[in-house]
Image (cartoon, one colour):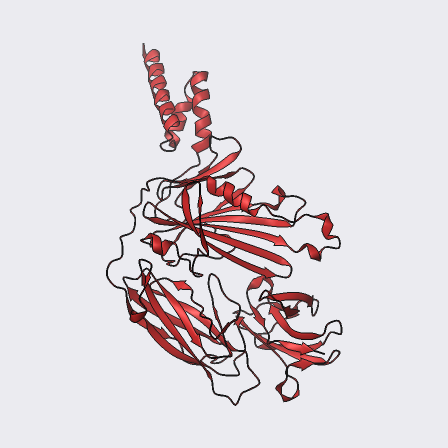
Length: 484
C-alpha cells in the first residue's frame, strides 16, 4: 500500500509543477526539478520539461542590480524576449540578434538629463550578417531606465540637449534625439528615444554603423543600407509596459535652488590642460543646464553625451543638460593663436535649474572664466600644434617641412599616435584625406614631434592635422591652415 501512496504524491506534485509552468510564476528550484525527474508518467514529463527548459536559467534581480531583468526564449517561435517585472518592461528581438546584459552599447552611458541611479538592462547587438551585400557594419539597441527622473517633462529631455521630435509607435509616445558621428569613412547614427511609463523614464538607444562606399574600388559591389527605420520600428513594436514592482520616485516639489556652483580654475590652459571642471549642488531641481556666453574666438567642448569637438562659441549657446548634483569637465580653446598681445577671451558660464519642464533663469548662478590666446583649440586628453610659418601665418608651401608637436595626457601615455591630414567640410566636420606616416608614431611621457613634408597632392584652405591614439583614448585637432 505504500507504493501507490508515493506514486499519487508524485503525481500531485507534478500537477502543481504543470500549473506553475502554465502561469510562469517563478523558476523551479533545484529540489523541485529533482522531484519532477522522479515522475514515471512520460506524458507528465513531456509537459513539464519544455517549460523548465525555457525558464531554468532565468533570475529576477534586485533593484540595485544593473540588469534588473531576465532574458529567455519566448513562446513565439524564432525570437527572444527580455522582461523585468522590477521595472515593468518587456521587449522582443529576433533570435539572430545577441543580447549582452549590463553593457550600454558604444554611446558610453545613458542620455538621461538626470543620470543619477540609471539602471542599464543591456544591449541587443544587430549583426551585419543580417544585411549582406550592403555597407551596413552592424548596430545596437541599448535599453535602460532612470529611477531618479520624476516627471514626463524631465524624461523628454536628454543629457545631450533638447529633443528633436516626438513619435508614437505601437501606441507609445517617445521623445526623440538624433545624433551622429563620423571618422575615417565610417558613420555612426544614433537615434535615442525616451518614454515615461508608470512613474519611470525609459531609454531605447539605437546605433547604426555604415561605411562610405566611395572608399571601395568598385562602389557598385554593395548597395546602400537604408533599412534602419524598418529595424527600429520592428523592435519598438515589440516593447510593452506593465505595472512595475519597484516604487516610482517621489515627485519634486517647490522652486529649484542652486546651492553651490564653482570652477576648478578661473583661467583655462593652466599647465598643459585646457579644461576646467565645474561642480554644483542643487535642491528640488529635475536637472540643470550649462550655458555659455563667449567672445569671438572662443572654442568650447563639454565631455559627455553629445560631446562637441570644438564648438565655436559666439552667438551660439551650447546647452547640455546635467544631473541636479554633479560636475562637468569643459575644454576651452582659442581659434586665434597669432595675436598673443590681445587680452584673454572672457567666457560666462551659467548654471540654470529646471523643474517640471520649466526653466528658472532668475534662480541661476554664473561664473566668468578667461581663455588665454595661446591655449590651443579643443582636444581630448591630447594637445596638438602645427608650427606656424613666419609672421605667425598658417600657410605652407607644398614640399616644405613642418613640425607637428603633441602631448598625450593619458596616464600611462598611449603607446602611439596616428597623424592624419583632414579638411573641413560643409557639414561642419572633417573629411579624411590620408595618414601621414606608417607605422603608428610612438608617443613619449612628455611632448612628441614629427617632421612632415607637406604633400604636393592637395592645395587650398581649411586643412588640419588630426592626432588620434588607437582605440579613441585621446585625440586632438590642429588649427586650420592653407597649402599653396
